[in-house]
Image 1 (tube, rainbow, N blue to C red):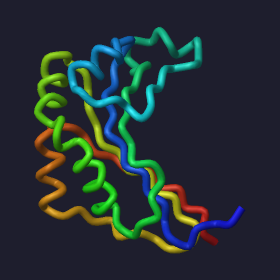
Image 2: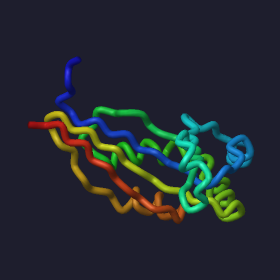
Image 3: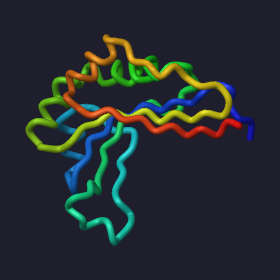
Length: 137
């Protein structure tokens, strides 16, 4: 397997909660998720303090040097649905979040966000997180 020189960045928008109807979520928002995740560990499935269902839209791993550019790509995908997403989150009581997963084999990306991207994310009133997997030497 050839390792990438460029960092790989995957940006995700996630709606999470406990045992919620992901089909109703999709119908309310009007866009299909790229992935649905459900807790597979039996001992964790029934803990009400831990989310066990995620409805996810992601960019997939993009070879780019800017988390800002990858997040902007995701936000542009969500743009036609942003009012429905915000309303759904308010009405359902579910939590929304943005996450960037950065994988580094050699080069590192720019860890910066423009005011434009921050304003777009702020509209959703969601948290932002980032995980970095650094496999460089």
